[in-house]
Image (tube, protein in one colour):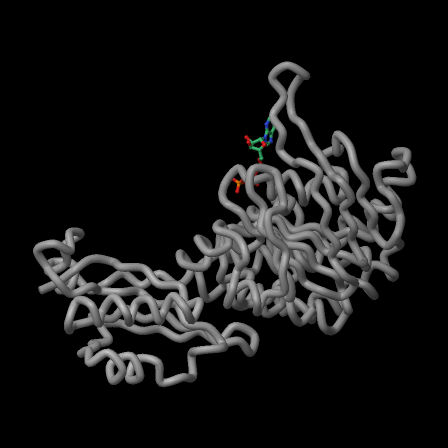
Length: 344
Ligand SMILES: Nc1ncnc2c1ncn2[C@@H]1O[C@H](COP(=O)(O)OP(=O)(O)OP(=O)(O)O)[C@@H](O)[C@H]1O
């Protein structure tokens, strides 16, 4: 388990200090995968680097399995770091060492002899699918394979927690999926607690149990992943969700679309559905109740860990007063709606 208590970090001197983290409280339960998401500059890297003291917090506490790392002297911190593995966006492998030697590196520092090292490394090569690549150098590996080496190296000291710093940001979507799958497997098989930072909702959706949204160094929302995707409680959460769900209207529609409703009477609406209303025959009910013709122009449904989320772009045609009432009905139902423009 990782606990961050009132964690703050300032860079620079007093008068022009930059506040990168401001009184952050976050708990990552044992065996869970928690994602910290935020835009560039929000403080994600600073946060994750404070967990293993690569950055010294300015104030607050960092507890890993109950031990406050901010209170440790250098030798005790070195020892505590054996419990914390970390992987990075750009892998950080040693180019002059083979795959095997890279994974062996932390064990050498810990004083393992050759046989004990082999005993540790062989199953890690298997787990990460690298057994046949053990004598290759990093330059002869793909990005995904490099990240697998980094994961094996991070696991060599048998850590209790794994920190992932944008671990898939440099990878293509297919490789990203395979690395995320590997992380999920490791989490389940080894019971490893994982804290990751990302700017991608797709990563959170794929493997996280919980999510923490960070902005301007402050934690603005924490939630289980299902509720976060179906009903985020903050404006920023909703923005992330909309960006994730975004489907651009087709060009043929954009060409007809006017931002001004005075010359074109029929609105084109984007509606986000969630668990509560995705299954209801909402569109046909609205059409019947308000005598409207509703054309669905685009639609998308996502399954987020058992929760359903849908997005639809639809054109509402009919009497202006009836359209207004239909929109009011959507609003009463707490559905997130947005008028994209008007058509005639
Ligand atoms: N070493 C540093 N010295 C001064 N300011 C820093 C330093 N590192 C980060 N910052 C500042 O702290 C704030 C948070 O940066 P951080 O790198 O933690 O954000 P981030 O969310 O990880 O961004 P990105 O996704 O772009 O990496 C930013 O305003 C950044 O400019």
